[in-house]
Image (cartoon, rainbow, N blue to C red; front, side, top):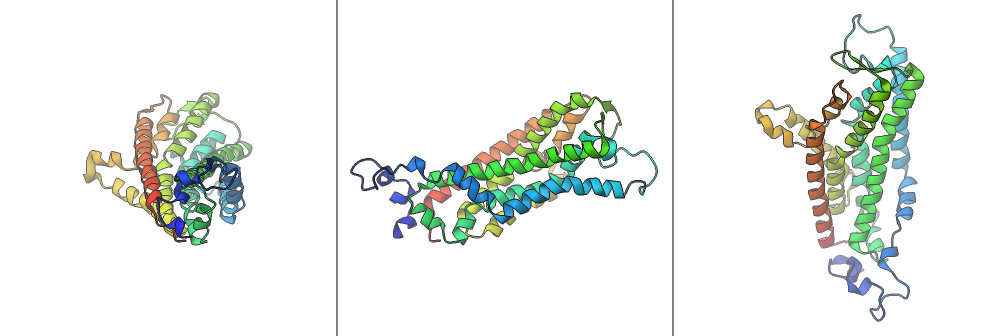
Length: 303
């Protein structure tokens, strides 16, 4: 197993692992066929944390519906216009509320879990070096792990608002959307395409969490540390976001633009904040993922 300890070995994808004649590799070996995506998808799907997390995400909208039904009439009188007060106005209003209360923590934990646990868990089980001894080139192993982790993260971010839309429509009807703050009404069919953009933006805004969790996962054998580090980033960024003394510097924080999607549901949608949020998220995530690959290529894999 000493061959797994250095980035320049055959196990890291050197010419000795290409499978060409006379290179010493096994007959028929092709690096591009190692660790197929479907194999990794099935492996991750069968894990308990995957099933538990998706169960929680799919159950949350129904729990919120029950909470609103049980608490109906128990609130203070008056017609307030917060997003929580308009949640029972219809399916789209309810879906927007469910997304707003889950995006800042629950979805962060889900994305951090899928991306932070993927490589670190192999190291904690002492199976990472055996995967490299298959031999699976390091870049390919990391790429396959990243694709599957991002796929599950995307599914997590998408399934919650869609389930909330279904639950809210069944519970409160398919009505026009009332805008928080102003109380203006917008036709539901007009808002529906915008809500698709909102879900896409919610996914992109989680890229930084995913990338940091993946970077930490590639450098540690502690899944909890990788997941906790990514969640900690969001907590620290949210705290700094409240420090108004930072002025315009706050716009470079990874969480500053997370709620910009609310502007897409206004009577006159404004996408400028969302565009800035996409630029910040994609830039940070690209840098972090590049560091993850660079670090893993040089990592001395001993577990």
